[in-house]
Amino acid sequence: MGMHTAPRPARTAAEARFRLIRSLKPQTSRTQIMITVLFVILGFAATAAIRGTSANALLANARQSDLVSLLDDLAQREARLQSEINRLESARETLLGGDQYQALNEAKRRATALGKLAGTEPVTGPGVSIAISGNLTASTLLDAIQELRDAGATAIQVSDRNLDVRVVANSWFGDSDNGVTVSGTALEVPITITAVGDQSVLTPAMKIPGGLEDTVGAGGGTVTISPGEDLSVSSVVPLPNS
Amino acid sequence: MIPAIGLLVGVLLGLVLHPTVPVWLQPYLPIAVVAALDAVFGAFRSVLDGIFNDRIFVISFLSNVLVAALIVFLGDQLGVGSQMSTGVVVVLTMRIFANVAAIRRHLLKA
Image (tube, rainbow over all chains, first blue to last red; front, side):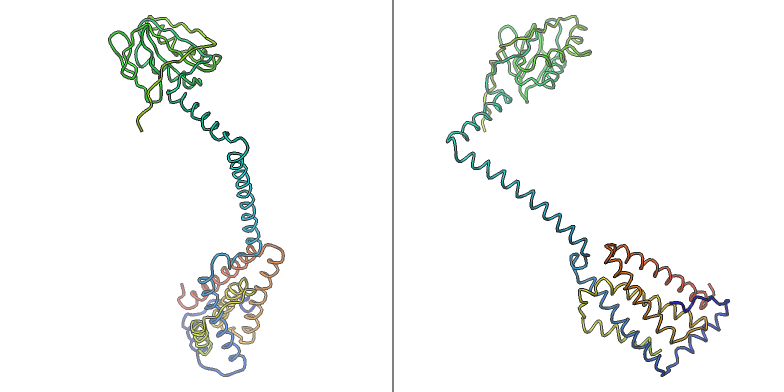
């Protein structure tokens, strides 16, 4: 390794070229033959190494530690999947065996819960009743409904003296002459919003600064919020034809 | 001249024979090749310096290859094989660049 450790002073390029040409002359000594053999081996090994790299896949060149960590990953993944299989199999056995009607009851429970959300089932329960009189615009009502939804109301109904309208995901609001239109039904003020949900959350939601009370109050109207233990959201929307 | 032909013969042999590198040799072969290239460039430089000695070249060639493989083997045993290979390749490549720069200065005066 130490054959060019002593740098020489620079010589002329012509001299260097002369040395190069002189070294190209065929010589036959034992070390020359040895050097030739080394060069043959070098060419062969370089070609083999290049071919080996291009031909082998990632795994073949990976080191032992890399392979071990790969194997670890696979084992962990297998354990996760195995536990998921166990969970799903036990769920399957619960549904198949035991109470014959368990699956049916579960499906019915889900259908009821979804029906409440979709507005196809009447709902009774604790909640708040909000009476609004005076000037009410559709955007104010929409804001109030959004606020009630955010506060966790499960069912909402808007009614005037004669009509009830259930508020669902695709309900719409518009202004009309004597009040607001909800999903095509014209309602006259004063109107009442009935919302089933947690009273302790719904009541503050209506009273927050800039909320329903402030907006309606600024327009000269009044808002009366009364919690109830057994409110009834009785109107339903028809099931859409599927 | 004859060694250059030898190099060509080696490459042709490799292309024709399609050698399969044995698994135990796979981590060491690329390092050994780079180490040998370092020796070759060093020899080329010393030819231009006028201090070339064929006996020293043979010994440095073999010792370069052996030491490089040994370092990588040691790294594998210590569990830092890939880092050690990278380190050896970096050092050898730096030496090759230095030698090529010297050769360039000799031949082109630039």
